[in-house]
Length: 369
Image 1: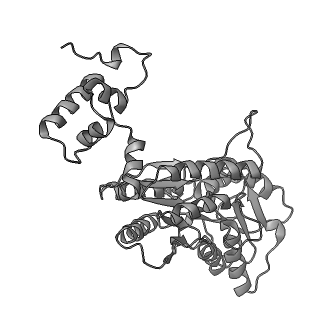
Image 2: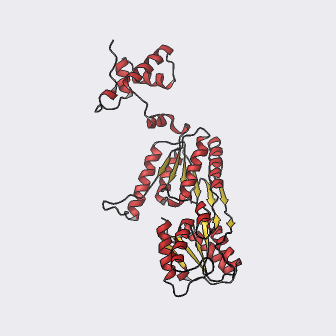
Image 3: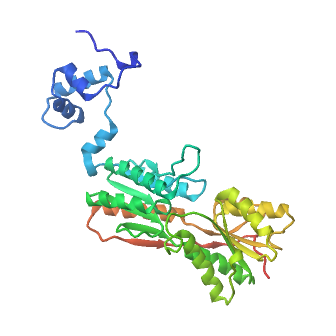
């Protein structure tokens, strides 16, 4: 009998399916499926023959089809974020992926990103919401055993999709910010981070303190769950406790990362009356801001004291080593994985919420007054 021709010799040929293998063997598709999966009452000889012909034809199982067949009892854990960055968002999700892989769990990363329009701009919020919801709907159709969500960059419409997913037995673990969803959550206390940064400046004798953060967030601007609002609340609380005033013009909103730092510097230098100290959310933004104002002749910390946020490695390499309030990446990642593993063992546990806080690390960017 002549051997079947491998599809690799015919580039235009469609991928070989299980139907092709069954036809070549003269067997029913279900028999071939059982033989390849190792399940069912199929003889050793039949399994060997099916495996041989499948290899000759170049057949390989469809991973998605395998997942669907396993339903929610497999090893597929989806790690989901609204996007990856150069900051700690990517570091956290990669750390979770590594911890899960050590437990023999498959943990691919999915990003529900903004969808650009035909001219390269970002669509309106309704379109962004619909796009993220559709992406999550497609992910849920793959039936992961659990979905781990980085909450800050997900539109509320995504949680509606996750409600349908959990109604069908799926598991959800959320991290970073508190969400109005009945699932296990690791919450990073951003209000406390901003409070610690402002307190460090107050304790150094500063009474005019500004606050800078990136614009963004899907939820309404007055929602206390929005990370930006939590940070502002922490800054204002520290000032209020010290009997200090806060001023609207000293609350700076800018673009993310390095471009945001340059924008922040322009806003700061344009002020007639400047604060003597500034809390800057994100160490990369603080670095760019520091470089720009030093070029303009402003001295750090003599003229302006700075506190960054997250305590990333770049804080050590700023022109003036940057004081910062840490974001505990390892504790967040480890906490998520521990909640997930216990949830996989017992689905009937009540939803749990664990709050983690950072710590202030002082360096040379703060001058005493």
